[in-house]
Length: 336
Image 1 (cartoon, rainbow, N blue to C red):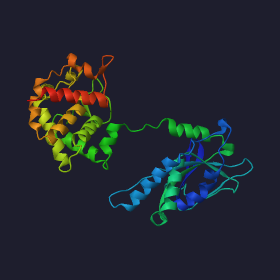
Image 2: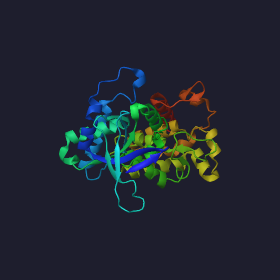
Image 3: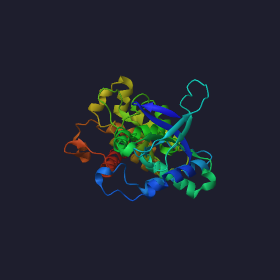
Image 4: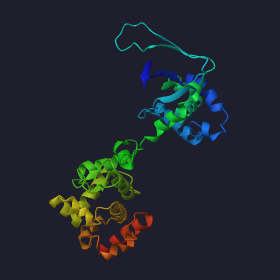
């Protein structure tokens, strides 16, 4: 299919994994360019390509899985004295005027400014599992690039504006990860988290109205359920409901619905969620979860000097040591 961007032709095609191997074999076998200014793509990372191959094979071999590989971008370096030949098919169908046959000279050179790891991963999947991948295809955008004048710009434009999803968004959409699934169940089942949890950010914006983040909820659920073997969803839901009933600042938030409470309380911090989860995990093993009712003994205000144990340069720091220190502090305060 022929298209036009910025006044120039491009073509959308699909290749089987075998055809992709044939087309790009010279590209992957090409010696590394020694002149830095002629570089047009990253150095291939075999581990990353192998991970993609495994992702493809898993998606094809396991009934509940699937995979998706986005189209790759290939530039076609055609010498000035050569030309390509595109013959449109006379289909007389509106919108299909760009459908046709593309002919490229044998001297054409292919480069992959976007998608070389996807390409090599697809090729490796074909080599490792030929039976599974025999009918698989991948979309390709071919861009004519006489004398290689565009490929560096294409690489830059295709890569510099990409935004990697943050951990909250991953937790929201990842249905393969059991702890993301549990966090979503807690989010929808425990009132204090509903409509007060940032789903697309790992940081709380001052005027957002949120007091928690989904990624911190997922992390805390994972800590809470360490060693648990069954009823994980219900175990997490029961625990966080129990905390919400007895944490003084959480109760205040539910009655006042004032998100500015977060500015004066350590009770909503990601560190606190994780520390409470560690407390819950230890109390569950000791069959003493009723001690959560004593959370009201603790002064959760940020001004409490006891919280200096998890501060550095007067700022709350979340790491393994401060999570453990805070959990130990809580356990001591709610002891009989």
